[in-house]
Image (cartoon, rainbow, N blue to C red; front, side, top):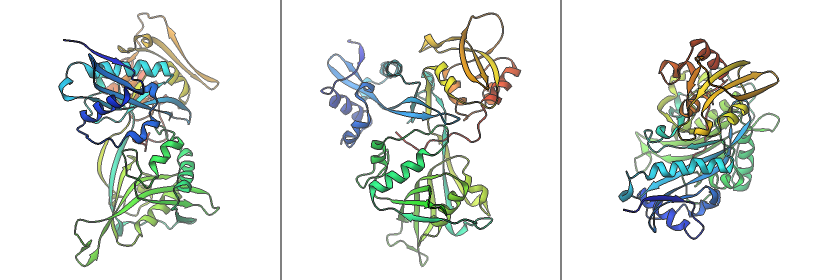
Length: 413
């Protein structure tokens, strides 16, 4: 039987590749073609048996924020699909291997993905780097412990171009590790009146908070929907639910002001915050924090470290230190070996060392992905047996990796 093979499709081969990916997910109608301009041709891969294309994958390209505010080039792996008749034949590994080497050729430092199934990608060196939560809030039960001293104002923006420009400025001013820097084309998907896609868009309200000096410092994207009763009236009350799709606030005052606004919208009895950080700031200012009920918590961004030395040199650290470690990457063996991370007040270096009998820390790309943005403590991974080595070295690395806030990314891809 002919072997499966991978290759980079040209423009004439891409429609068949895209169809195979769609069919793998049981999708008949192609509503993703309009977003192909966000997916570089150089980051597309097809899977074939003889002359038939039976699957493929694609990747977006964007800068990814690291602790300290620096960015590294990243590839956002998506659309990994293989038709049902070819599943279980090794096609997934071929696609991932081809994607990883393609990323290195394109100069990417990491690959990221949103896992449709959490058990699929650990075997390829991907690790959970950010998490997300969903919250429910009965708006009548929302109040702040203390009144805001500086209220500012909230303004609804109806023009798409103005909404994109203001929200992009606020989004870009964030300093959270794990977030991706959205391009102008990406914002055309986030705020648009057309059909809503996985990236965003569709009919929605765009609310922007301005501080007392007129500076935009928070935005919210939301929709208001009636509850299940056909008239929306339950027990004599008009009942609506506000679905908060995105909230970005650059300071605590702006976040409080935005929640006050959202909870006062007429007929809204419940607020559902769909994609939120696991440690929302607003909870710390509520009279009764329990009213913001966590409905779910799950993994969000999975990272696969490609160029480990380059990644560690770009991140900022909590203090100074000197750590030696053995790094094992079976899929990218050129990055395996013993290394020394040195963090000083004047710079950061990652150098390869000669291997000797000295016991040092040992970990691989999956563990590095888990702690490099600050999502999982190094000491926790050591407790789980995923990082081995001297306890004092574990504690030193754990201290270096501490961050001010949990990493978070708002952008699906």
